View 1 (cartoon, one colour):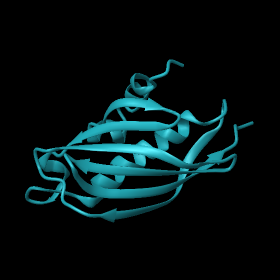
View 2 (tube, helix red, strand yellow; view 1 turned 30 degrees about the vertical axis):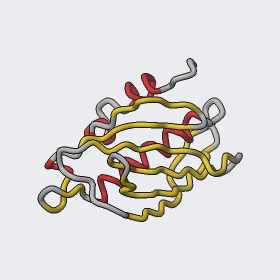
View 3 (cartoon, one colour; view 1 turned 45 degrees about the horizontal axis):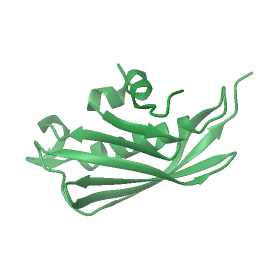
View 4 (spheres, one colour; view 1 turned 90 degrees about the horizontal axis):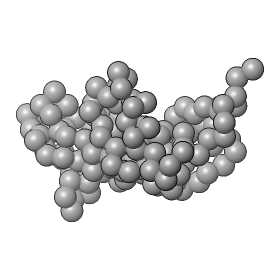
Length: 137
C-alpha cells in the first residue's frame, strides 16, 4: 500500500452509503484520515442546516476507514459505540472537513476521534469505538 490510502478508500466506498453522501478523501494513513463533505440540500434537516445524522455518518466513515487501515490481514471492523458533540451548524452549500485520528489502537478495539470543521469553526467532535473482528474461517 502506498503512503496515501485515500484513492483506495475512495474506490472502496463507490456504490455504498458513504459514496451516496459523496465523501471525498483528501489523505489517509494509519495515523490520520482527512476528507470533505459538501452540504447539499438533501443532507439538511432544516433549510440550510446539515442534519446531525449526516455529520455522524461522515465521522463514522472516517473513523471506520482509519480502523481498516490498521487491521491485520483478513480482519474486519464494526462500530461498537459513537459519541457526538455538536457545536455549530454545517451550512448548506458549504464544505465540511473531517479529520480522524486514533486515540487507541488495540488488538480488540480501536478508538478514533473525528473533528468536523467548517473553515475555522468546530462543527462536531465524534469519538467512536471500533471492534476488531477476527478473520473468518
